[in-house]
Length: 255
Image (spheres, rainbow, N blue to C red):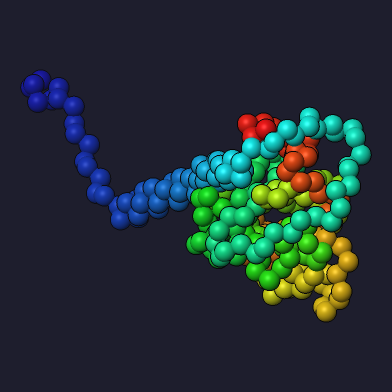
């Protein structure tokens, strides 16, 4: 037997299949798409949401300390401070208020900017919530209407569909604190601008209530319709009275 007979026979090399290469490329592309979506929808929202929350904290500090504010008593009935102070309309794209929705998380806070321009307000890392121009200001009789994304750019209103009747929605300005209570939700087409009327969905009606309206795209990952959450103002208090008990921790360094 020769030494050649003991050598293992080499298997013939298979040619590279075009279909095989294409399949590997598609798998790689699919993984890249999944990674990008994970970054855009999940990680990016965490990072940008954190930046927007920090900006809200910084804005409240710019308003100055709360002088001699009493310790909030959550069991006490709201004190009547008369008609709420209504701020003048802010400059376009500037932040003029902060908003707090405990249902969205104990540490959730955002700046409200004037206007709903995508690049300048809703996609901004220091704003994220926009006030519809022409609607009322916080505490004003009529409709204080705001908008935000549910996904990407901080996803500020991601949990808007989870609001429960009676949930508080707090708005703070340099003048004071405005407490609204969530009442109801409806779904409209993007053309349903009646939700921005002083009396939502009732054209030319005379407003008597102080309403807040939160709007966002719906369903998730789609702009097919809008989800709209309504609330009615329950009370207001000047900065000198201190913040409502449920959001006092945001202002503990400003007292």
